[in-house]
Image (cartoon, rainbow, N blue to C red; front, side):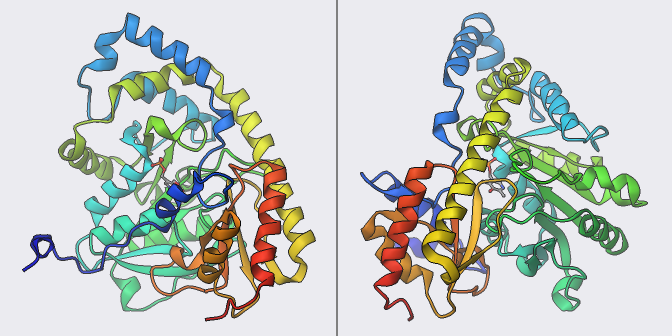
Length: 401
Ligand SMILES: Cc1ncc(COP(=O)(O)O)c(C=O)c1O
């Protein structure tokens, strides 16, 4: 018996995240990374954070360094209420529950709802780390195809759907597809959730990073239009993409019957999210600087998305298909059928560019010719060069398995 045989057996083999595995490569000299979903580091408001942190530790050490409440620091909860009000969520289902990144909120929901063999309905392709979380609780994932309006409805009837306990959806500029779910689909999904008594969680890290088109209301807002729906949907979000992921501050707005259970589970998991980070985040949000920060972020990402799209069109022409996202950090592309993007990645890496092969975002087998390109961390000149390197890798041929 090997020592590792003593570890718990799982229904599904644990997969390492293709994205996190690539992060180490991103730091190689000369490498251009279109792989991670990292916010642009040049945007970080580090001087203001530095002043706020010094003031916090000098003047309020008991708030920053002491244990706190599981639900979160009241000062941050108030700041989050104001933040979501600006997103049109004027009557949240409950007080915000502060989590250690939105990743923890997804984990908590999975633990609260899923018993082995229960089904989680997700978009296809899906956010990779949510797939990992649902695999850890031995959920079956029912992947639903998406088109330009989001998750396709009606959901595919059958035994898997009959066992559904949770729908998990990234409604705005989804990771990895870049797609936003339309208002009509959101309303239809809510009607289905009420009729079938299945809880829908909307994960919205990217909604504020809109650089084109018009915002669509959150499910918890639209729930007012569907009788009974406010009991069957929740909203999860984060400061990671709009401010700084290192804070590890996320939050969840949930109906009371879900929130109470989640809070108990969180208590067992980590007692509470770092008080230091919460107090710092609260003070930053209170400065009112987020509005200007977001304007800069939207402009920067809009320019970068444009630069990547133009380069793809100019350099790869009909060899690539993609839809231009109206926000977020990702562009989803498909190459000619038959091309295997994991073979392309191996070659592209040698040429100094990395991306995530599309197959990583599917619970089962996905298309081999798709890839996720993140435009957040490279400037337009680097993006142009990255596409040139991709073309060189493609031109060499031999990418069909
Ligand atoms: C769709 C989605 N949800 C959640 C997260 C997790 O974010 P965090 O835990 O940093 O809040 C990410 C990060 O990439 C994401 O893309």
